Image (cartoon, rainbow, N blue to C red; front, side, top):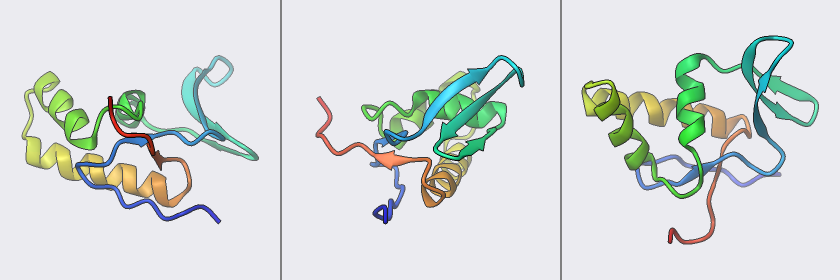
Length: 101
């Protein structure tokens, strides 16, 4: 069984090896492909997932989105952590294990 991932602002989220974020030409939308599962995240989730490179921390992702949308960092932070935790609970997000460069 996969280990439990607790998402915090210091987490460095990444898609696990078994999951790939791809644009599905047939559906004309982004999907996460995993063995025997397909998840179709909304546009905001896709934007967040594209930033989950295992190098950026959740805090970095929140800062980037808050600046891009000139939005309240606290509100964005809560939403990003909740979304990533939900995906982690479903096995679609892992935490980078190597130390950040």
